[in-house]
Image 1 (cartoon, rainbow, N blue to C red):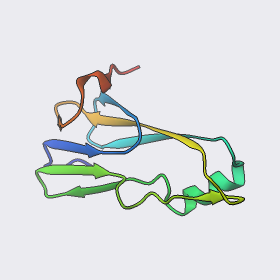
Image 2 (image 1 turned 60 degrees about the horizontal axis):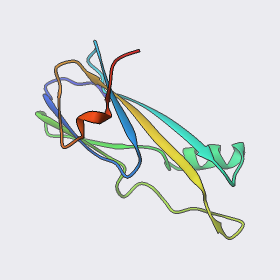
Image 3 (image 1 turned 180 degrees about the horizontal axis):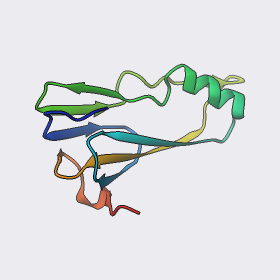
Image 4 (image 1 turned 30 degrees about the horizontal axis):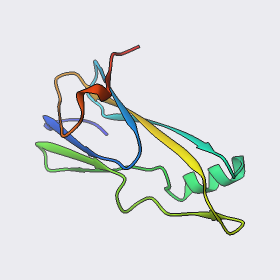
Length: 109
């Protein structure tokens, strides 16, 4: 998501995430998914249905990033999907991030 006039970001995710800063003007997200009771086709299907997509809302001063209301509880062969999801969020330098534990920040590789 291009960052134009927004100066702050809040994040509301149910999954673990790491924050990294970089020199740029786009908010970028990298997702890692491990399925323990599903294969590649299941992963492709869930991804195409938006299972790992995040929602970004902006009011020109602030961006709110969340996965709330988008994630579905999937079943495979009548068993709940067992997955591990994590995100790396790349934030433009100088953008303030609200409501996060500073321990989640990582230096740029």
